[in-house]
Image (cartoon, rainbow, N blue to C red; front, side, top):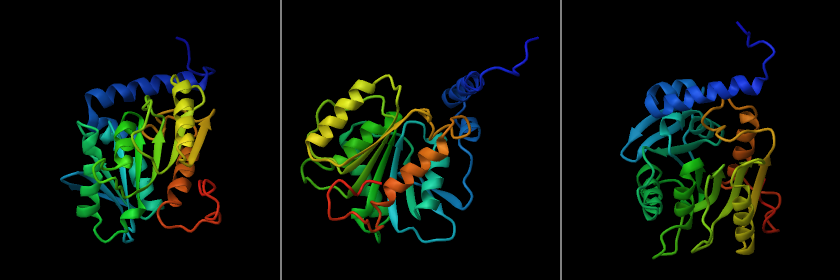
Length: 251
């Protein structure tokens, strides 16, 4: 029998990823333990809007809404953000059916889960298929033209809009250099900059997509998390050394 010894590490990782993706589709509860380890110092509670992750020994001072199509595998990233940013992190149980509902969900989250928090310090993260909902939430209510979202992070979005009906807040695009939709993401980046949006693009060559769901399987997940935390930290009240020059307040 041929041994795994000497096989490329990526081959072994690929097999492991197939297993956890199968578990996500068929046994979500099991997938949670295979893919997303619990985070020390974080706890969670249920709400009508979804699962809320909190730091154990501190009062959260900001709200993060984390849109993902696989909420069962969200606890590692959500727990990490809760602890490292001292945040209340909401993971909706399901993505909004209509994109227009995303902004309503964020408004409800601010009112119901974080009424004492500065609404202008709310940030939104969209993971893979949750990216469109995150973009819609960041655009806000088209009738009022208001949004409480200070920063938007899009993690390896599989698709992006060809045009935007409004202006997004400071945005992070976190993708792998070899993404299948690389050309679309480059064009989306151009559209954002053309519309005056400060963009922080993180073009990874050594960090694979889906790192947020499979931190134990994807090389470089710690680096990707550090980059995301540093970006969001600028939107939740940490003073910047580059406040005077628009677009420099990105890292």
